[in-house]
Each structure stands twice: as C-alpha cells, then as structure tokens.
Image (cartoon, rainbow, N blue to C red; front, side, top):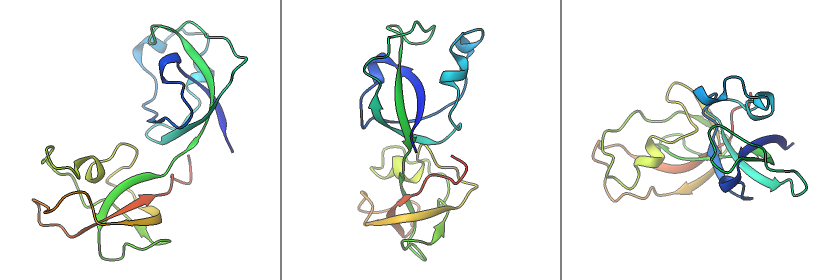
Length: 150
C-alpha cells in the first residue's frame, strides 16, 4: 500500500527510486517534518505517483521545494553468494568490497540493504555484471524484497 510523503520537486518523478536516509540537520524546526520523515530509514522506495493537485512547499534542503508523492518499498538488486540463491530463500550480502571500479560494486555494496541482515530473494536475475570477482567470490545477481518492517 502506498505511503504519502514529501520529496524534492526535482526528484518527484514516477518510477524514481531512492533510499530514505533519515533526518538531515536542515529538518530541525520544519513544519512539514512529520510528512517528510514518515519512511523507514535505510529502505529503498519507488515513487508510484505524484500528487498533481498538491502545491510545492518550501524546504530548507531542496532549492525549489518539496512535493507530495506516493511511494512504496522497492526491491533491491544485489549480488549474493551463488550457493542457495533461489527465489523464496533468504540470503545475506557476501560482505564489503573495496573494488569501487568493479561494475558489480553497486550490487555488492548496495544502497538499501545492510550487511548484517538476511533478506528474502524475490527473483534470481542471473550472472552479475562483472566478468571476474577480484575477491574470488562466486556470486549471483538477485533482487531482495523490502524488509518486512518497511
């Protein structure tokens, strides 16, 4: 079920995904705090629609203000150890990776998933984007479901 929240006017596009990072220092004293800070920190969300009749509100962080949008928790594309990587199973990330130039780095160290938590795999995507893992890991690309508490 979608949740209504506020995002920056420039970011308010259906389909856009973001990870809610929590309160910023500029949020202190804002009259719209409860409408902006109503998501779960560290969870990836997808904007499903923009409230067309809502006005743009002033914001200390977003230069052209914020708009009301509907969001829902989104799946997180990741790489996990291949052993046991099948739809419906639970898996955790393999661990941190220092190789930021690797095409798989955003999937091995993804925004929206924690290293110390297991997630349910909703879909197996197949081979990861890299040709060779520099940490010699046998990985499979999958999508994690949003956490149950999102």
